[in-house]
Amino acid sequence: MLETTLCFPLRDSDSNVGRDVLLIEKRRGLGEGWYNGPGGKCEPGETPPECAIRETREEVGLEVTALEKAGELTFLLDGDTHSVCHVFRTRSFTGEPTASDEAHPEWIAIEDVPYDRMWDDDHLWLPGVLEGRTVVGEFRFEGGEPLDEAEFVAHDLEWDVSV
Image (cartoon, rainbow, N blue to C red):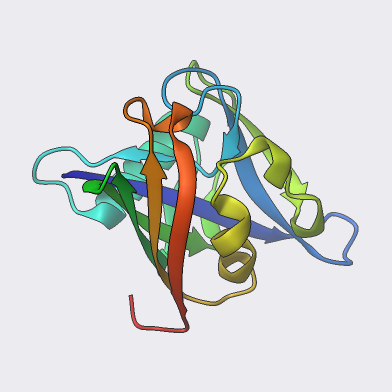
C-alpha cells in the first residue's frame, strides 16, 4: 500500500478579510495540470509528518513546522486499497514559495479554491479541512490504473474525529 501526504499551509489574506491556502499546480506525474497541496509519497522509514515537511520543501521551498494532522484519506481502486493519504495543515512556515520542476505554487483565497481543477473528491473534504475540521474518508474509484483516469464512484466521510 502506498502512503502519501498533502500539506496545506495557511496564512491571513493580504486583504485582511480572509485566509489564503498555498496550492500547487502540478507540473508532472499523477495529477499533472491539477491543483492540490504540496505532498507526495512517503519514503521507506519516513513518517507522514517527515514526508509532508520534505515534500513541501522540495516542491515549493517552504520550511513548514507545527503540522496539524487534519485527515486520513483511503483511496480504493477497483476494490483494492491503492493509497492512504495523510493530510496536514499549518500556519507555521518560513520562506517564500518558489516554483520547481514539480509544482507551481499559488496563494489562493479559501473562497476561490479551484475545485473544478482538482481531484473529483477534493470538494467533498477539503473545505472542511480548510475550516479547521478533521476528517477520515474512503474514496472508491473504478477503471484501473492510472488513478487519475479512473472514475470516482463513491465515498464515505467521518467528520471531527481523531486522526
